Image (tube, rainbow, N blue to C red):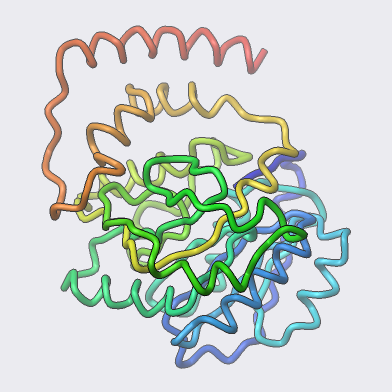
Length: 308
């Protein structure tokens, strides 16, 4: 989740596919930006704790911290690369072009996958019985960033990371399945990724692209949005987003959808509510409609100033 620089170099993205992924289940997209220690830990956790074979696809933004050389030395990783930081939306869309499985899974580079994380996601997919779903795993975070996360501190950074304690305790941390899949790790069928066109680049470098992607799936008719409690990752917490200048994603979202992202996540997706099945059409109160009208007016003004 992150980043930004000049977009003139998007056309210079390099594509390298060399892995043998005939038996892979998920195509795992991992955008990274000069975050090599966390990327190594993330990849190591996937290798150690996955019960299935997967296609690993990394997008390297800049990579001048040794990321380019390290990824190139890993024969089981396909990758795309840009000399500049092109943002998470372009990064994901580039990486997805190398996907060779039926399922695209987005994972942050500062996430550590817990044992059997992938097994539980596949069980959820198989239980749905159709391809029109969006399913998230559940993050354990030092400080919970949402009601969809488990708050438990196993280290705020790699230096303080207590891997042994996490592995001993993670499965017993109490939490339930939840509604409203939005954030990574998330997985969907490739046909629906292609149908909605991946992540929307007007949100570059990436802020508010997650709820936008969920809303695009909603508009495409998908109503099964689930957060799977058993599939767990440890999330150090936005290691890249803290380093980048923000885009006006909040106002871009309102201008695009005519409503705030909170209307989508709270009323449409009911994010964080205990899972009770497929979502139904929401009822939007008159008060919410009036508030969103006011926000549309403010958004138009704010965006006009930002793009002057």
